[in-house]
Length: 256
Image (cartoon, rainbow, N blue to C red; front, side, top):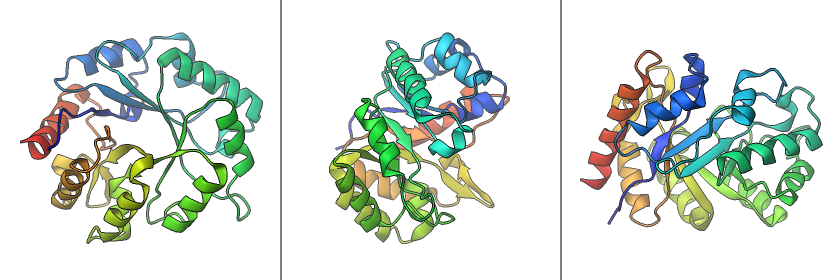
């Protein structure tokens, strides 16, 4: 039986809408019934980046209602030449400030190899790294054996299970079930979205493949409870109402 969901959105679309204030984001989220989680994508470590400034000096996500916090980072080369030492200093500050429990990263190879040395530096600094299974457009980061080899080699790390990414590799969801069973004990949370036309990050209640995603999640959550982070593109004009509809849809479909 699926119990109370730990569920909430990625804040990426808030920032896209110009809602940069964490205080304002948090106010919107705390008014949505059922929301108790949030994921923050950190795309830049430039000193003048509005998102970075807000995360290090502005409001704080953690609170009585938002008790599951995820900080999604990108591959180290995409941080514009910021050296690993500075990255670690900034990341540990943000993690501590917001009480982030997990730090997802996209496993992407550089010159044919995963940057294991960089991953080890992050983990030695106490950063709770987790690797996301990648979509069909990526050459790396989705093969089960490669991912397991990476995690075994590092002797640490978790998995962020992106259900839409898994669907893209096999519409029957057999790949998704196989991946889930293999990494079950390492799964930190699920990324949840669907596809609608050309949009592969659509809200699930507006998606053409909602039935397949819901069926998989119902099966998986009956085996292992894990938070749901909503990655669907919500309305930039009415984000609260848009997120609320998605949460209500998933709660009804998964919990009855």
